[in-house]
Amino acid sequence: MAGHKLDEIDRKILAELQVDGRMTNVELASRVGISAPPCLRRVRTLEEQGYIRGYHADIDPRELGFEVSVFASVRLNSQAEADLSAFEARCRAWPLVRECHMLNGEIDFILKCVSPDLSTFQSFLTGELLKADNVANVKTSLVIRCAKDEPGVPFDVLEARLAKNA
Amino acid sequence: MAGHKLDEIDRKILAELQVDGRMTNVELASRVGISAPPCLRRVRTLEEQGYIRGYHADIDPRELGFEVSVFASVRLNSQAEADLSAFEARCRAWPLVRECHMLNGEIDFILKCVSPDLSTFQSFLTGELLKADNVANVKTSLVIRCAKDEPGVPFDVLEARLAKNA
DNA sequence: GCAGGCGCGCAACATTGTTTCAAGGTCGCG
DNA sequence: CGCGACCTTGAAACAATGTTGCGCGCCTGC
Image (cartoon, each protein chain N blue to C red):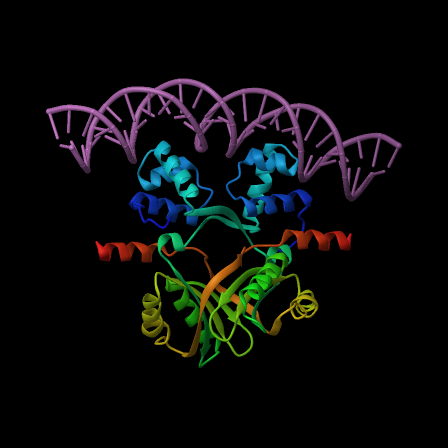
């Protein structure tokens, strides 16, 4: 699956679609330097092979009234695999939790949450998260402002590494 | 700007495009229950008004050889606005840093980073981040696994709130 | 050199994107 | 109550794009 059999054109396609996922196929083809039909075939292949997991509109939560973002550091009582999985399943079911990452070190999980306002988050925190089985400790940090938010792959780094190894 | 003058159709459009940002306009129109032309006009308006910030392909970093994700908690020596802005600007320039959020509490910033391997991240950490001006302290946590990663807006919560207020 | 496979580009058709225009609906005001 | 301005919608027509099948050239291995 991780066979790095991507040529330069494939990587250009991924980089372009990461910047603008709604670009038309003809536009994409002209940018990467091939004609439209093979370009479309490459995109389909990249989708099937899992390089492209999907396409999503990037919607501003604040514009829709989600004024509050919070990072929550969670510690559990038990780190047995079954308990970890159970907590992850609960996170997937909570709509306010948008991301859930398991970490090494003292903190077991970090959650990224959004909420319309502080009181909504507080009732989630006290009524749901802190009451959940196996949760020992939660430390929350309000996001004051966001300087950078670009999930994805730094293609410039990737190209630099490939150039060095060549 | 934050005038919530979105009707149900607009919210449906946003929800659909968040799930599949490459959906065809005619497909989108049929899903939200109107014909294609007004649907396209609504999408354009939502883009212009900032509800939709863009469209991005969701690319799996692991497939491209970025095996390591790290959260870094950063404390600065000075929290003067000029110093905060300077640090944010540095984060925007580091390709391995994908997200940079300013927090309240003890921690000043949390960074989400990706890297091809641990040694690359370590050289970034010791050679760049820890050497940067004003950085007092950095605590890093490796991501072991990711249970949920759905940036965006929980539209089910939004609709529930609107129903309650109606 | 030659057969096979692979990737490209061309051309044709199906589908979609986009504009234009007229009809219906809503709101405010006389 | 009725009128008029405004907004939104949907149908039609055209331009643009998505999609498929086919043939050519290139590389590879024998």
